[in-house]
Amino acid sequence: MIRLFRKRYIAFKVYSSIFVSKRELLTIFLTKAIALYGRENVERWHIRIIEYDSQTHYGIVRCNHTAVQMLRTLLEEVSQTDGIDNVKTVGTSGSLRALKRKFGDKATI
Image (cartoon, rainbow, N blue to C red; front, side, top):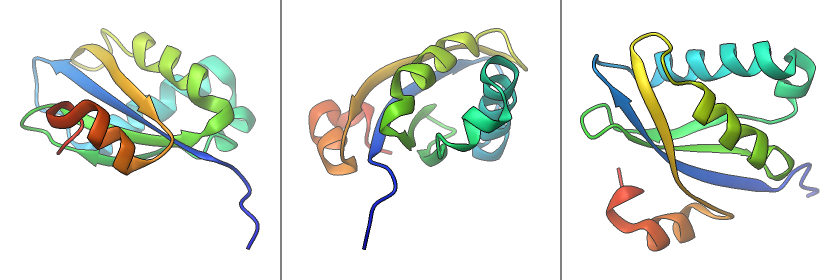
């Protein structure tokens, strides 16, 4: 089987004054990404929120290896959108297991 892209996982924390669900967060990410980079580019990123805990506001997003830097920039740009005060990147890894091992409690949902 041929892999079309290499996966990267980014752990993040959302600072928000209101409740934000996983679905709302993905919608905010995609809307902002399309506005900044265009639909065709964003479709190639294969963005997916793997885990998100609305209580602790920690989450993990998966993307294409070529989109890591753009997605990290996007996460920083999301601030002041739809009640979200800020989104900070905790760390990046090539596998989900390594991400949880490196960042422990911060990446464990």
